[in-house]
Image 1: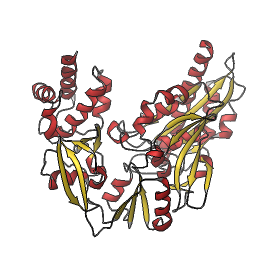
Image 2: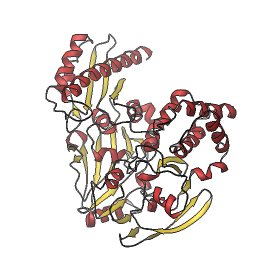
Image 3: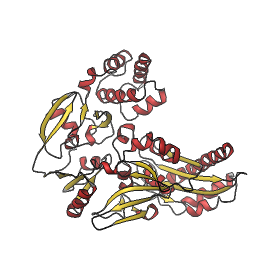
Image 4: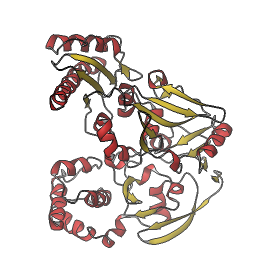
Length: 162
Length: 294
């Protein structure tokens, strides 16, 4: 059993983008803040901080989750992928190119979260239909693009995989 | 938007979790998937002294068929339920209902047990499990007991579970699983909280007469409403416009929905009647089709 009083810190060990990170954190620190403040990986954006906007989405042990709805202490022993690790993934660079080519982003605030969700999505749905893509994107708020460019971009990457 | 301080406990077994609940249950809270609870903490609507994180209780992460029941461990992720071939085969309404819970990204983390004990009156799982006549296993240091979901929900976000207790398993009886099923929901945007949601199970005989039916509605009262008397009106009959109208009226006759920013009381009641009709028709259609193919 692990026990950490509120006055204490816990040393957590995580693998972030392939690099082992060991840092001590207080229990109430959100994973999103840990990634940005303690690890300096500010590519993960923080929008609403209550799980609605999806901007802070990262992969924890391969699945897309809201990093503002997890505590850093819960990521002890986990493998985390943030947008900074995208280039290491097979579909990472193609996704970045396709988002750029299809105008899948404008201001870019929501983009890191959407790229991470898309990465997991394409792993499990190599050849998705538009409805599936829309369903996945429904977990993200974007106020610039109208989503159409993103849907096109994801189609483009999946077609390349065929 | 940062949570207040808390002591953090992470038990590695159910026994350890129960010991912690015995000691800290009154001032502490259980943390499962956290997809409803962490927003509450972030907004400081709740400031518990300690959190008991049950995400490491692998012994409560399972879906299995046993003794005529589908048994689901409390910390099973909602996405696992949604993708399970076993659930799809045995209890397809659960897969249909789960797809309405939040978004893929929250279902990846949210748990089945967490949704049941959170007891949001418009949440998909409490409503569907109530329709399925499910029961839950509840453990504490002193005892292990079972509760039927029809007695479990007390009011908004309140169940009969005590601070020293842990919900460990959900059991769905498979013996008389209906052929017809439907889950209908309306929300402002897909993935938002439901304004009203309806789950329906239905069976018909070879000539299309209804032989059994169960239906529950969420979002029209402080707890999901199981409409037993209203569904009895369908038994021995075929569907007709007037019968559906009567059933809808009866389901909502005692309901007291809230007036809020998203919908007025009248709107919710009207929406409930529309969705009840749709759910019964869809379940009926599926029951007839299933009967034909057998």
